[in-house]
Image (cartoon, rainbow, N blue to C red; front, side):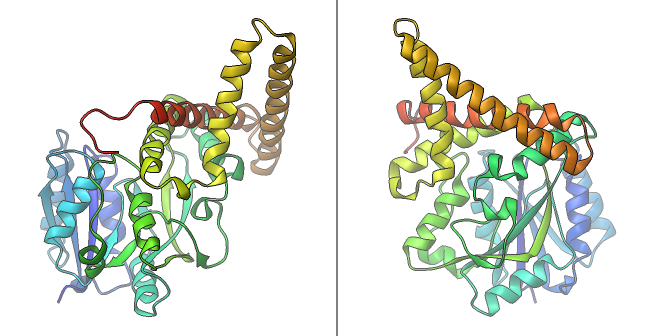
Length: 333
């Protein structure tokens, strides 16, 4: 009897999908009570062939593939939920590697009523074997890059606003709805807003861990946080009260740079204020870079961490401001 449905949205994930499936297969939870549903966005690489090969060599693990024709994460999640047969739904990502007791700990939390969405923390690893990738992994796990997001920086078991991925009773989706397919990202946060507004709880348990591979280059990091910032702005059109301090600081910083930059053309005080802000910001991020280089014994972090941090702040902040002005075409926001 299937108890747990693991759902995984993916598209062209031939480099990582086998690693995820191997991690699911190695779980301490009884594998004959688990099914894996991969919502594939019609991959054009070898993703499906790898899944088919793994399935044929591991017949004791139920693996199914469903088409995600829209090729966006929330629609993939919803297509997988619709065919899931387990009592519990556990979302994972094709880029993630759950710890061996991940499913067991998620189910334990749900069965004991700790929360209606149970999740854990990321052990963030570099996306490549380069100094830039190592610096990015450090920056996105540091409070200056992650704010107070507990799933990134860690902490004791507690109620939080969101967790990565998530574990739920399937019945929950019948009660509050599935993921919003008009949000191309931030769909998990928006779902958790509805969950909390309905009087339910999101619970973070630090014993639930998974490896998350950060973006390997500054360009990919910038694209990721641009997407995050833009779609966070769209979500906040509906839920303005959900804005957190960690989310508003980068837009304020970018707005200050832009406004003072323009005013400095005609106003000497603005020029001085802009210089002070830039100098202070540079001192802070390079100070953290030096601190991290000493902690991790990686000299390159002294430069890489400040570059990654600035990329996060400027990309997120700019996209957030742009998202407040420009709505997505043909999308409800």
